[in-house]
Length: 156
Image 1 (cartoon, rainbow, N blue to C red):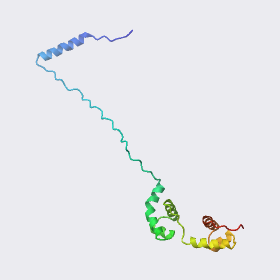
Image 2 (cartoon, helix red, strand yellow):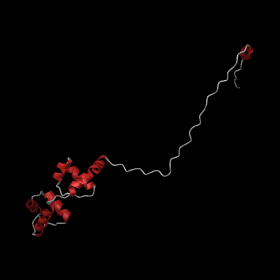
Image 3 (cartoon, helix red, strand yellow):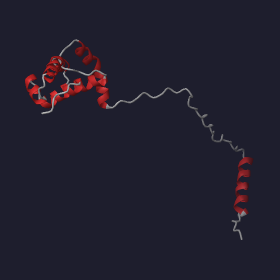
Image 4 (tube, rainbow, N blue to C red):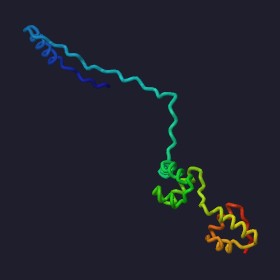
């Protein structure tokens, strides 16, 4: 069973009588404009030829990119890492890392002489430990130079 509210016709008839009396006495009913509903804007479709995003760099990589030209210029002049550090204000570790980031393997100027000396000592049959002492390097430094340059020492 549906329940519907019944509308009492008496108040509606009373209101209609009051409106008619108002209009007969010279009053006018002004019809106001209703609300204007603006249509929604049309959907903006993304362009099909969107440019690819730029690769984002980490903070370290961005510092390497920013400092790279200056460090490469100083290194290409033949300055030592210590002088580059003094002129640029960057630490030695940062300079090595930045140069390696740009594909440059920094080598110290005396390394070539040291490599030649290590090759001569290896050819004479000396041990790695003795050769490191002769060239003024620590054992790990001499081992690294020997490994990078393919120098074989005799076993101790």
